[in-house]
Amino acid sequence: MTPPTSTLAFVESPVQLLNVLEWAYAEGTAPAGGAPLLDGVPRQPDRTGGATARPPAAAAGSGPAPYGGTDRRPAASGPRPGGGATARGSGPAGAAHLRIVVLPPTDPMSRGQLRRMAGLARDEGYEVRWQEARGGRLAPLKALAALARDVRAAHRVVIGDPFSRYVQLLLTLVRAEELVVVDDGTATMEFVAQTARGERLVRWHRVGGSGLPGRVRELAYAPVSATARRRFTPATGKGRRVEVFSSMPVTVHGAMTLRVNDFAWTRSRFGPPRLTRGTDLVGTSLVETGVVDPARYLDAVRALTREHGATRYFAHRRESPEKLRAVSEATGLEIVRPDLPLELVARRGPVGRTVVSFPSTVVHTLPYALTGTGVTVVVCDVDPAWLTGSASPRARGFLAGVSETARDVRRIPVQTASAAG
Image 1 (cartoon, one colour):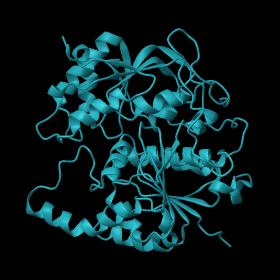
Image 2 (cartoon, helix red, strand yellow; image 1 turned 120 degrees about the vertical axis):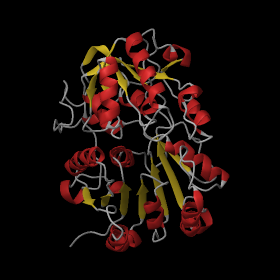
Image 3 (cartoon, one colour; image 1 turned 90 degrees about the horizontal axis):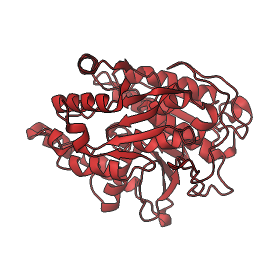
């Protein structure tokens, strides 16, 4: 007989699935009572070579694994994460009976990475369910009907994207007393800020629906959005608990609790990486989301390539083939399309001794994943002049905040990257 679903997780991207695995590992290795892990977060070595905190957990094996391959080396010592208690017999009770529901997007790159991440999750002993919820007018309703019973039965729900309208719709069925929000990149920063202010949940780069059709859709969806906001607001007297599991620099509010995601699962399973002599650049989807002008972005990548001697460009899964072709032709960079989230790819290696990125999630997560390896993470600020006319009014301040709050990174002023020859 199949055991009841005590914890149900919903993910829509490879990074969200990675962070569910990190959460489950942290849940299984937490102190008695599951207290938030706010101490003992590893730090990068300082520039003089001295350590600034304890070293990371022991790494599994040595040497790199190929991009996108499945590293099946034995894990480091210590408890394995949970949901597979019935599969492995060794999962901690805190994450027992974890079922991960993948709600895949339609783009091929994301789906490919998700399938590989789902394989890693199954290797850890978790049950993974692939549920199509897009691709047709009836697909969302069919998925809702298929998931309704498990959603109502779950005692705890883990969410990868609180801004997702489909996830918010599922929340109307949730009876669980505990919600856990794992990182969906830098969006977590905006999620915590908006819930603290009691605002409607809107992605930072979204301008909003335009015209009458857009306003009608927003009005029709308002009750669902309001229900989601209430569910994300802890209420001790009503038994509602909300935890944020994050690598981002967030300050939780009210009765909300925080657990730091220091990528302990990634560090215990993979690496340490072999370091190359070159510099790697990390691509972003700021052009695809309409925030940064394509020509300005290309100029900045060209300038960074020249200044840092970069040789490879790790593409974001949403970057278009046309844009990547332009980057390659303008810079001579080798374009790498990772088959897994960059945190795993970098941890497994090979990776450059210097990794340069624009403001994005990785300037917060890579220092955790690569702690103790000698890799320097550099963030290049975004010049306000690069922003498009259609960019959200919040874009400038939000991107600056992503850079300013990044830990253990070196910042490059916008003037340096703007000086394309």
